[in-house]
Every structure is written in C-alpha cells, then in structure tokens.
Image (cartoon, rainbow, N blue to C red; front, side, top):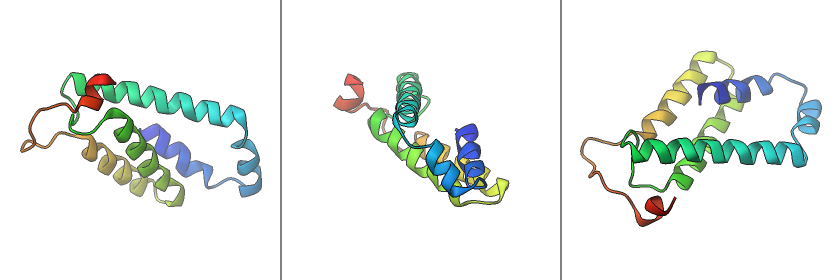
Length: 109
C-alpha cells in the first residue's frame, strides 16, 4: 500500500494533461481492476488468518483502502504520504475490543 500511495503522490507532479491522457482508457481501467482484485485477495487472506478485521467484507475494505490512499495525490510531503498509509493500515487492524467474527459476506468472499 505504501508503494501505491507513493505512486499516486508522484503522479501529481506530472503534467495534468499528460497524466490524464495516460491514465484514461481501457488499459488503465483494467490495471485498476487487477489492483482492486489483488488487494481484495490480500485482505481476504489476511482476514482468514485473523491478521485484519473480519467485521467488514473484504470488498468494502478494499474500496476503503484504495479511496483513502487516493488522497496521496493531494499530498506533497513524503512524510504525509507515509502517515496516510499508516492511518489506512490502522483502519484494517482488528481492535482488541472487537469480537473475532466474520460476516456472511466475508465468508462468501
């Protein structure tokens, strides 16, 4: 996730017109879909190992992460990008006070 946030942050530094042209189209959509699926699979596996929270379906957590990390595009300071990444990762962690349970949607994922 750190690498993704850094990439988003660095994309801001490029010419907006060129960046828009390069990040449009079917190839970009397909790449983003593969990223979403990859992250969802990681979260699903981590939830099965009880390494991340299980009270929210993996698909929702995936969208949460990707949208949260998209904020890196507005950040100029690398330390701020790192804080954003750490905050996002903290949101994935199971709280010690939360019950260790899986939702029916998570079980189906």
